[in-house]
Amino acid sequence: MFDLVSMRAGLAEHYDLAPNPELAASMADLYARMDRVVSPADWAIAAPYVAAINALKKERDAVILAHNYMTPDIYHGVADFVGDSLQLAIKATEVKEKVIVQGGVHFMAETSKILNPEKTVLIPDVAAGCSLAESITAAGIEEMRAKYPGAPVVSYVNTTAEVKAASDICCTSSNALQIVNAMESDTVIMTPDQYLAQNVANESHKNVVYWPGSCIVHEEYKAEDLRAYREMVPDVKIIAHPECPPSVVAEADYSGSTSGIIKWVRDNKPAKAMLVTECSMASNIADSLPEVDFAKPCNMCPYMKKITLEKVLWSLHTMTEEVFVDPEVSDKARLAVQRMIDLSVKLGI
Ligand code: SF4
Image (cartoon, protein in one colour):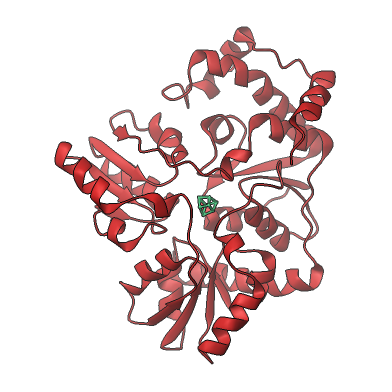
């Protein structure tokens, strides 16, 4: 359990983190990226943390890679690169700085470490897990292999290093269909997200068999709720993440990864949009799309929300928690992740 009291006492010894409207006003350029979703009072609270983190990043030769589900203060205030799992994994291979702070959950930090064994990778809260990653172990992969002999295992990046190491190749929600279709076998095992697998199966010519894991955020959406909303707001565009059940995806005007969702909204600029995914997504793109009125169904990921500005500052200050992956596991897991990256580049995804 994270010791917030000790962390706050430790931070208070080294930084002046009192709300600071003058400092906030001097950082108006950063605030302009989020002023539709962060109030001036909240920005005055966040500004001292943002300033301290951005100064400390230089001192520590660190870079912050932040997932699209981070809160706007992290996403716009301190992140050096933002994106979905695939984009962050690719970015992790290009980082020049010595330290990577993962604005995201633990499997993402592991992926960064796997791709950069020589770098220091920090996660601001080790308890930032993932219901998908926790749903399967390497033994589960072996169980699936025994059930479907010869079928390749395509594992979502939302898995532990141990599971990646036991898989043939990884995928993300932005490349899952193409990766599955590129497998030579007629039957393909997908783990651990049953809904992503079912959504891929609906579009693939392969026989997709899957593990029964699910994302606690996306499985909560219901097709009948979306239908009811569309009846009330007929011109809304509904955009769903493929971790949602197929019945939900069937109600959507578009389904794609978080980066796919951002691109679709930027390209189409609908007057009204509902993003059927984690709630920070709409907040993070709202300021750059003032012409779009976002409906905000809010299913929050409790794991992603464990990463906060104060924990990012503490992480950089103390250089904790460092992420380690057993070298043997790491080598095998890297093969599965690298195969995905190479195939994605080859397929132009
Ligand atoms: S949103 Fe779902 S898949 Fe993503 S980290 Fe949270 S629980 Fe895992």
